Image (cartoon, rainbow, N blue to C red; front, side, top):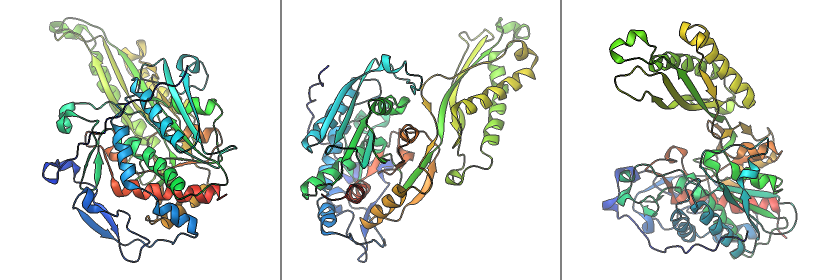
Length: 480
């Protein structure tokens, strides 16, 4: 099937004045470099707002004239304009707008002179693969998009997903509009700005800076724009199955001035707890499935505590590295009837280095042990199943040079020295790492604002990451 036609993008702007800025848009401030640093990371704070704070960052000067040209060519205004266009595409997972966001990326990559592979993914066929990561959104097709700067194996891959989660209650958004970018006080707000369209436009901005500066890379750099990340990662899976690889990969997920070198995984569990229905006036004759569910909750808390004892050093800073939580519960269908079925679904963390099957077995065993100790559940055991996406854990191999290369690119481009951490949530990192491709995450934004009604990304953060990406591409790929 030929690529979908380009989507007409609205050029309308929706910028909040300082007086109209909601309280939740008060984070993060514009950052200006002190005189001892390389350059101002945000050249024109007046354009975006008035909140300014100063910080002292000791930066390494770029080593070559070509690197300096590339850094000077980073166009933050153009990056914000790109973000405005991409946010305007409501690419909720499973919607046709996912295709439109991929078309937008394909058009941008073509304009950069990349060789673009934009193809239709047959999701039904892909789902037959034994390693298919699953999906929660209802889709029969999706589109992949890969751009490669030149022939040969890419020395560096930039990866980002273009799908977003639903906006939730529209009354929580200014003007009930999550998809009009609002720029004020040094931040850009709207659905997908943080997770992770900000990262996508930042690495596209870096590649545009290389082109503007006339910097030709000796080895290819690639961009993988993927869909379906939020509900399992089918886009990355399809891209890798198609044969698109590289020597190393940087995923532009929000990392808040850190480098994420490992991800814990996550699974969705479903518990079906049987009861025995009866009239509410004779409840003593029945067994409440709701009460049996309540009795299981302490068991799940104990399991979570055991699994978080002695965590890997990369995630030891987290209060709960591998969370276990119940997110939904559906019980009963009539107020005066003792419920005969409770269905609970939740999120279950997978430890670093742990196989998914091992994590599932420990969960199932804990539930089975609780059932065995209860007279009713011993005869009518809880059914455990695993719907939705499967996020295994993943990590960058210890000692791989990509980590130090990324760290040096960040500081040499004017950014603060990043801490190296692990994250408690799953991303596409685990899929790239599983192929043997060394992968880490570094991108603009704070994950605490992902999926939230106050989702936003700092303008200075976008520029800082774009500069680091440009320098990393030059140093990893070389100059022709």
